[in-house]
Image (cartoon, rainbow, N blue to C red; front, side, top):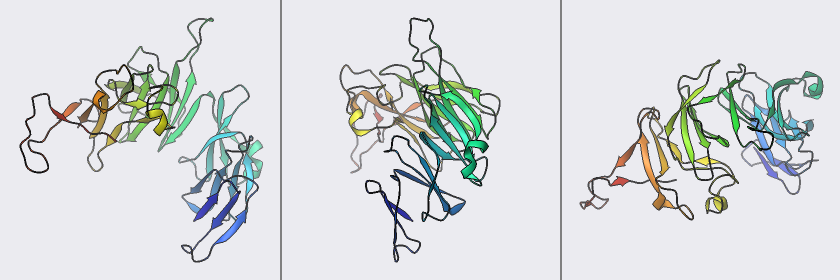
Length: 308
């Protein structure tokens, strides 16, 4: 285990559950540390405080470190190739580039790095899938485009443009769930509207998404529900979609039943459930009695409401 003191640039290492602890002073801030699941000796650390945002590698469980890249926005261990890491690097043109680095000879990354995708806005890895967004050109030279395109790669195949069954502007994406060769994506269309889309049989050469649930509760920082309490409790995008573990194809989601004039609250939401991977959604039937066994006088449109 490695425990990090980010402010003082120190880590503490133990290999015997804390019986013996060694201190290691670092030349960087260990803001984020990620271990390689195939070798406990390998770990990566990203310095998010220094302006160069350097990525550091250790091959002896934290005793020694050396930098392997800089201006790193994010990094991911590669699931397609062993001993490799995917690095999302910020460029001077305000776009990002993703490269693949081999950890066998990381000192030679400038010569041995492989381009994965460039000119992107954001990048994410989920299981066997890689996702990237790119800005679409504006409709005219006098406009500023807010439309983003989503690109996908399955099992390290070439990236393909994801197609969505909508004509609405797509301002941002949140990958909600990836399982059983299906992908759930929440798409931000306006300040208060986000829809849930699901792919059907996504493969190496195509990615088509169909509307699953309109008006799902999704939060994108600085994009949706500005001025609401959501900005105070979340600094990352999220979607109120819950996968029922152990039961294939069952999900529960919160839907915005009416757009509030002010701050959004539980009274503006309704819980929906699907048993077929998002093809159909229904309200959750309320139980006939409460937890004390007393009969509940529930009308025909009464349903059970859940929230995370």
